Length: 181
Length: 395
Figure 1 (spheres, rainbow over the protein chains, first blue to last red):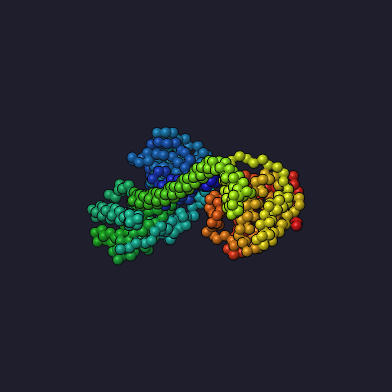
Figure 2: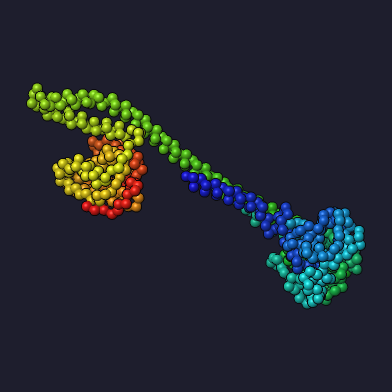
């Protein structure tokens, strides 16, 4: 009887756990509404098509984000942009001090994560308050910390730049089927 | 479920509508300013990027100004321009973002161009996320509902079983109390009736009364047996235990029924090791064996064989009483140990119930196997007295 009661209790706990997990992961694959993973590739991800320059005020100091990359939050034009600064070890060597409310200008590839947040994979960061600059990627988006900054990739690939594939293997990657009408 | 299925197409429709609106705005701006300078400040929130390409593959305008004037592979855009068709698809951008790509032809002052518009999908996909969330919650609730129903069913079932057991126990307790009271009230008058009947039996006024008196004495003896069984069954006191010799116990019990066995032409055999020690109450264990022997003899009215075997198995003594009698039907087997359940016309239904009670008091078990027409075997399992090192069996 004791064993049966324990089994019942155990199954209840597992089921309640599944119930909560079911809700938490309901948006899996489409991005959660509350701080799930972004689904972006912070290490090698970069798309020259989405390169923009963002200027704004620092609202949050660099803090650990996904894939061990540091994230700097900047308020720019009414939206919060999460600027990816590269791996922690790499950034710490840069010795570029950033303080709250500093005016920052960052150029890089902009993306929207599955969590609904806006990210910027920074290529160049300028602290306009102090005048300090940091180069995080070359013009083609190859990360400095990767040590492969020779620039072998071309900005005009014959294989097609659309879809941003050049940083991810050179070809266009289509997530869904082609629909024509 | 229909909402869940419709969510994907709804998201696509939303994206398509948004893309067409933006394309119309871009075309309109481009028509008014073929240099595309007016598009420089055009940065709608959901646009990842957009570009205008001519048939040679030159990027005439791009939301990343660094790419304006550069060459792009326009192979997959040529059909859009030449056939004047719109195409759309989901693509993965270089950042890893999954985006919506919309290609449409543009006719700017007679020149055929193509517009590639790539949109963020987070807002449009909200409908899909919501549908998935609802679906997951619905499934979770259904599973939880089924589980709770199962739990409630199990609890109800257990409660019902407890109620049945309680009712049964209460019934037995009431019956026991009543039986004890009746037995007590009947015992003394029975003793008087038996005494007077025995006096009449010895010195009858008429000779024919001797037979009647004998009949009265026999019936009184039967009633006394019943009363004794009843009292033994309702008795709750712990019996005093002593060291017993299994062979002596069995031999003594057999001697009590040996005359009846001879009369019924039943061959009795005992297979029992001499040094099997038991720890129990002699009178009660003899009563158990006597009940089993009597049951066996009653099952063999035309003769047969009664085999009694005692052996040691691990920490237990196993006493088996097997007969070659009529056997017990499967329906009766389940109830044979229930008190007052009997298939005999003159039985009390207390014999096996009393056996089970006594064996339980000795921390033993009693099991019965039977086949109709082949006989019955009752196996008693009693704990071996500690310190004994007897083993095997002999005759």
